[in-house]
Image (cartoon, rainbow, N blue to C red; front, side):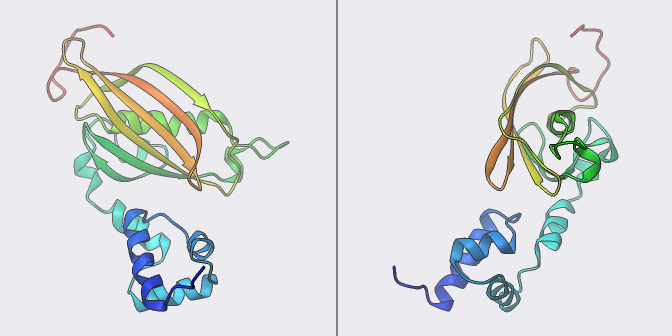
Length: 197
Protein backbone atom coordinates (compact mmCIF):
# COMPACT_ATOMS: atom_id res chain seq x y z
CA UNK A 1 0.00 0.00 0.00
CA UNK A 2 1.34 3.39 -1.01
CA UNK A 3 2.06 5.72 1.90
CA UNK A 4 0.09 8.98 1.81
CA UNK A 5 1.87 12.28 1.37
CA UNK A 6 1.72 14.75 4.24
CA UNK A 7 -0.68 16.93 2.25
CA UNK A 8 -3.01 13.97 1.51
CA UNK A 9 -2.90 12.86 5.15
CA UNK A 10 -3.69 16.35 6.42
CA UNK A 11 -6.60 16.70 4.00
CA UNK A 12 -8.02 13.35 5.17
CA UNK A 13 -7.35 14.32 8.79
CA UNK A 14 -9.32 17.53 8.35
CA UNK A 15 -12.19 15.64 6.71
CA UNK A 16 -12.19 12.94 9.40
CA UNK A 17 -12.34 15.48 12.25
CA UNK A 18 -15.11 17.43 10.51
CA UNK A 19 -17.15 14.21 10.24
CA UNK A 20 -16.39 13.13 13.83
CA UNK A 21 -15.12 15.95 16.06
CA UNK A 22 -14.92 13.51 19.01
CA UNK A 23 -12.22 11.30 17.54
CA UNK A 24 -9.06 11.15 19.70
CA UNK A 25 -5.49 11.70 18.54
CA UNK A 26 -4.77 8.07 19.42
CA UNK A 27 -7.61 6.82 17.20
CA UNK A 28 -6.40 9.07 14.37
CA UNK A 29 -2.84 7.79 14.74
CA UNK A 30 -4.05 4.20 14.33
CA UNK A 31 -6.31 5.14 11.40
CA UNK A 32 -3.52 6.95 9.53
CA UNK A 33 -0.74 4.58 10.63
CA UNK A 34 1.41 7.39 12.07
CA UNK A 35 2.48 8.42 15.58
CA UNK A 36 0.28 10.42 17.92
CA UNK A 37 2.92 13.17 17.78
CA UNK A 38 2.55 13.36 13.98
CA UNK A 39 -1.22 13.77 14.39
CA UNK A 40 -0.68 16.55 16.95
CA UNK A 41 1.76 18.34 14.64
CA UNK A 42 -0.68 18.01 11.73
CA UNK A 43 -3.48 19.42 13.90
CA UNK A 44 -1.30 22.36 14.94
CA UNK A 45 -0.37 23.13 11.32
CA UNK A 46 -4.05 22.97 10.35
CA UNK A 47 -5.11 25.02 13.42
CA UNK A 48 -7.40 22.22 14.61
CA UNK A 49 -7.88 22.37 18.39
CA UNK A 50 -7.37 19.34 20.64
CA UNK A 51 -10.31 17.07 21.44
CA UNK A 52 -11.32 18.82 24.67
CA UNK A 53 -11.54 22.19 22.89
CA UNK A 54 -13.45 20.70 19.95
CA UNK A 55 -16.02 19.23 22.32
CA UNK A 56 -16.32 22.53 24.17
CA UNK A 57 -16.76 24.45 20.91
CA UNK A 58 -19.57 22.17 19.78
CA UNK A 59 -21.24 22.35 23.20
CA UNK A 60 -21.21 26.13 23.27
CA UNK A 61 -23.91 26.38 20.63
CA UNK A 62 -26.02 28.10 23.24
CA UNK A 63 -27.71 24.93 24.46
CA UNK A 64 -29.32 26.76 27.38
CA UNK A 65 -31.74 28.39 24.95
CA UNK A 66 -32.26 25.17 23.00
CA UNK A 67 -33.24 22.63 25.64
CA UNK A 68 -36.74 23.31 26.98
CA UNK A 69 -37.83 20.15 28.77
CA UNK A 70 -35.23 20.11 31.57
CA UNK A 71 -32.38 22.24 32.94
CA UNK A 72 -28.98 21.38 31.44
CA UNK A 73 -27.58 20.55 34.88
CA UNK A 74 -30.15 17.74 35.12
CA UNK A 75 -28.91 16.10 31.92
CA UNK A 76 -26.74 13.04 32.52
CA UNK A 77 -23.68 13.51 30.32
CA UNK A 78 -22.88 16.62 28.34
CA UNK A 79 -25.07 17.58 25.38
CA UNK A 80 -22.82 18.65 22.54
CA UNK A 81 -25.30 18.92 19.68
CA UNK A 82 -29.07 19.22 19.50
CA UNK A 83 -31.79 19.97 17.01
CA UNK A 84 -35.10 19.89 18.88
CA UNK A 85 -37.60 17.25 17.74
CA UNK A 86 -34.96 15.84 15.39
CA UNK A 87 -31.67 14.66 16.93
CA UNK A 88 -29.20 15.15 19.77
CA UNK A 89 -25.77 13.92 20.89
CA UNK A 90 -24.30 13.70 24.38
CA UNK A 91 -21.03 12.53 25.88
CA UNK A 92 -20.62 10.75 29.21
CA UNK A 93 -17.17 10.03 30.63
CA UNK A 94 -17.32 6.93 32.83
CA UNK A 95 -15.42 7.42 36.10
CA UNK A 96 -14.57 5.10 38.99
CA UNK A 97 -17.72 6.15 40.89
CA UNK A 98 -19.88 4.89 38.00
CA UNK A 99 -18.58 1.30 38.03
CA UNK A 100 -18.97 -1.78 40.21
CA UNK A 101 -15.98 -2.16 42.55
CA UNK A 102 -15.49 -5.89 41.98
CA UNK A 103 -15.37 -5.93 38.17
CA UNK A 104 -14.93 -2.32 37.00
CA UNK A 105 -18.01 -2.47 34.74
CA UNK A 106 -20.25 0.60 34.57
CA UNK A 107 -23.58 0.34 36.34
CA UNK A 108 -26.35 0.09 33.75
CA UNK A 109 -28.46 2.83 35.27
CA UNK A 110 -25.83 5.42 34.28
CA UNK A 111 -26.05 4.43 30.61
CA UNK A 112 -29.85 4.37 30.82
CA UNK A 113 -29.89 7.78 32.54
CA UNK A 114 -27.71 9.30 29.82
CA UNK A 115 -30.02 7.95 27.09
CA UNK A 116 -33.22 8.84 28.96
CA UNK A 117 -32.17 12.41 29.74
CA UNK A 118 -31.13 12.91 26.10
CA UNK A 119 -34.54 11.59 24.98
CA UNK A 120 -36.21 14.13 27.28
CA UNK A 121 -33.92 16.98 26.19
CA UNK A 122 -34.53 16.50 22.44
CA UNK A 123 -38.28 17.12 22.89
CA UNK A 124 -39.33 20.64 21.88
CA UNK A 125 -41.72 21.10 24.78
CA UNK A 126 -41.74 22.29 28.39
CA UNK A 127 -42.77 18.85 29.61
CA UNK A 128 -41.49 15.50 28.37
CA UNK A 129 -41.85 12.22 30.26
CA UNK A 130 -40.77 8.69 29.46
CA UNK A 131 -43.75 6.40 28.88
CA UNK A 132 -41.93 3.28 27.72
CA UNK A 133 -38.37 2.24 26.98
CA UNK A 134 -37.12 -0.89 25.26
CA UNK A 135 -33.38 -1.13 25.89
CA UNK A 136 -30.53 -3.49 25.12
CA UNK A 137 -27.13 -3.42 26.81
CA UNK A 138 -24.82 -5.05 24.26
CA UNK A 139 -21.29 -4.61 25.67
CA UNK A 140 -19.82 -3.78 29.06
CA UNK A 141 -18.53 -0.24 29.60
CA UNK A 142 -15.59 0.42 31.92
CA UNK A 143 -14.07 3.31 33.82
CA UNK A 144 -12.22 5.62 31.45
CA UNK A 145 -14.59 4.93 28.54
CA UNK A 146 -16.28 7.83 26.77
CA UNK A 147 -19.89 6.99 25.91
CA UNK A 148 -21.31 8.92 22.95
CA UNK A 149 -25.09 8.72 22.76
CA UNK A 150 -27.08 9.78 19.71
CA UNK A 151 -30.83 10.35 19.82
CA UNK A 152 -32.88 10.38 16.62
CA UNK A 153 -36.57 11.28 16.61
CA UNK A 154 -38.24 8.54 14.57
CA UNK A 155 -41.78 9.89 14.61
CA UNK A 156 -44.63 11.54 16.44
CA UNK A 157 -48.26 10.79 17.19
CA UNK A 158 -49.85 14.18 17.83
CA UNK A 159 -53.23 12.68 18.80
CA UNK A 160 -51.63 10.78 21.67
CA UNK A 161 -48.95 13.43 22.41
CA UNK A 162 -46.21 10.88 21.78
CA UNK A 163 -42.73 11.16 20.31
CA UNK A 164 -40.71 8.06 19.38
CA UNK A 165 -36.95 8.24 19.74
CA UNK A 166 -34.16 5.80 18.83
CA UNK A 167 -31.00 6.00 20.93
CA UNK A 168 -27.62 4.42 20.30
CA UNK A 169 -24.65 4.64 22.66
CA UNK A 170 -21.15 3.82 21.47
CA UNK A 171 -17.65 3.55 22.92
CA UNK A 172 -14.89 3.85 20.31
CA UNK A 173 -17.50 3.42 17.54
CA UNK A 174 -18.67 0.11 19.05
CA UNK A 175 -22.35 -0.08 20.09
CA UNK A 176 -22.79 -0.64 23.84
CA UNK A 177 -26.46 0.34 24.31
CA UNK A 178 -29.56 0.67 22.14
CA UNK A 179 -32.94 1.99 23.12
CA UNK A 180 -36.36 2.76 21.70
CA UNK A 181 -38.11 5.38 23.82
CA UNK A 182 -41.74 6.44 23.73
CA UNK A 183 -42.07 9.92 25.21
CA UNK A 184 -45.14 11.81 26.41
CA UNK A 185 -45.26 15.54 25.70
CA UNK A 186 -47.88 18.16 26.35
CA UNK A 187 -49.77 19.65 23.43
CA UNK A 188 -48.03 22.55 21.74
CA UNK A 189 -45.18 24.18 23.61
CA UNK A 190 -45.74 23.09 27.18
CA UNK A 191 -49.33 24.24 27.67
CA UNK A 192 -51.24 22.54 30.44
CA UNK A 193 -52.95 19.34 29.42
CA UNK A 194 -54.84 16.89 31.61
CA UNK A 195 -54.27 13.95 29.24
CA UNK A 196 -53.01 10.90 31.09
CA UNK A 197 -50.01 9.06 29.83
